[in-house]
Image (cartoon, rainbow, N blue to C red):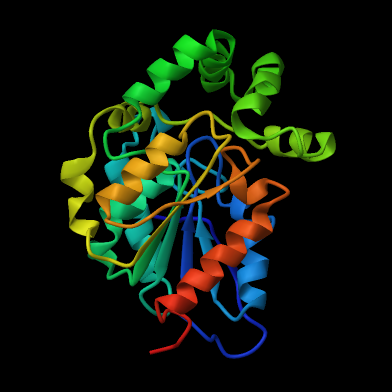
Length: 268
């Protein structure tokens, strides 16, 4: 399968383990290319991001709604196989579940879970969103049906994905790149994930969340961290798409420090 893989190479010899970034639902590899890929390359890491099938510039082999999480795992395995050495996998939201399923199969040296879908799945989060903010829940469903063409739903999605600190020009630019997500993949995420992600236990794992994430709240981050026996890092004032938030550098700095603590800043 032809997959879009965006890559930034360090200016000199790579100093550490390559990084493979995996996006969440409704976006593509472009979300990492804004800040994370060039910044980690400037720090000496070969940084790659894959667009899962039907996202970004990666074609779907059929209707996107037929693609499941297992298909996205297959995409990550393909992308990891094209990288020079086994990578550290960095997954956001839905992508965090995908990389946990893929990690052992591609020999990943570690994982970074950002705003992760929790091990128990998305079911309770969606129910809570519907109860606490019905207009936002309806906008999410409308955006799923209409994609970037549904302007009112896109505007409401701002509250779900971005904080008030993000500038309006940046919000408009990012919102126009959003797309619908596979219905099958979303259904896959509604169910408990423990059986499929249990093999990833024992790998060096960093779990990151934010205190203003309406989709994967702090409780979800803590559950994911507990599953892996680590303590989560919770950032303040950022929303779900933290890699595009004004505070992205704080997340990147913390991740860089963790890579060093795990010895993943050295080429083996």
